[in-house]
Image 1 (cartoon, rainbow, N blue to C red):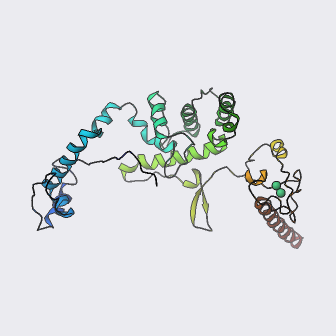
Image 2 (image 1 turned 180 degrees about the horizontal axis):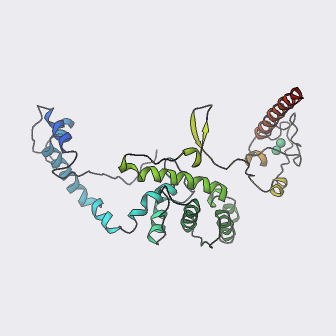
Length: 321
Ligand SMILES: [Zn+2]
Ligand SMILES: [Zn+2]
């Protein structure tokens, strides 16, 4: 088991007259036996309800905890923090969405600390989360921001794929051969990136509208989501349909030389490890009776299904004649 060395204690603070005061008054009114106690470090603490439902008791407990903690730890005043970082506060929603949240994928190795650093360096995300913003503007801002997270400079017409390429070149020079092959450390391709940015924009639009009580009139299916009717859920679009996962020339270069009696059944097969079907260039020739690569079998099944669809539609054509 790993134990985190950081423990964060967060207290809410309500001013005397606030929109929640009537709820809190009602809460303590319902508990008759609760009375005010004198809470100290050395006396037993009263029951949870007695402490939490009587404001005076709760205040004493919080004061005691904070005083004890202040001696040993750092205390962060949220109100002061907001004032201190005013310049980046308007960007936080968009930046949080774009760099990864419940509905948006994050980028390997790019965390929230890096995100704040890039914000402090002056990068802006003014259009993400604004329903009327132009798609091109959103993508340009997002590209510049994420490129900065990877420590890359962006030319005016650079796409995320250009930055991916540039980052690969520079990391080739810096790192050992072993770590260069960590594809996940590279920025995404433009195709995958654009879908992620759409989801970030959609999410930020919803957050920004939270105080109005009315969600923006936007369709998730046009913002990086696809409907999975079999399971009745929305799924993120990882790549737009018909996107080639690599140039054809590269695909042809990838082949395995599996020789065993049950070839391509484990991750030792380069094709299986790359989550790809085998091909005619492999030693197994992607023969369906020989190759045990599950991706080869899946591809075969899809092709069979497509063939039978075509047969059916051909049949229909025939009957029309
Ligand atoms: Zn193989
Ligand atoms: Zn194979």
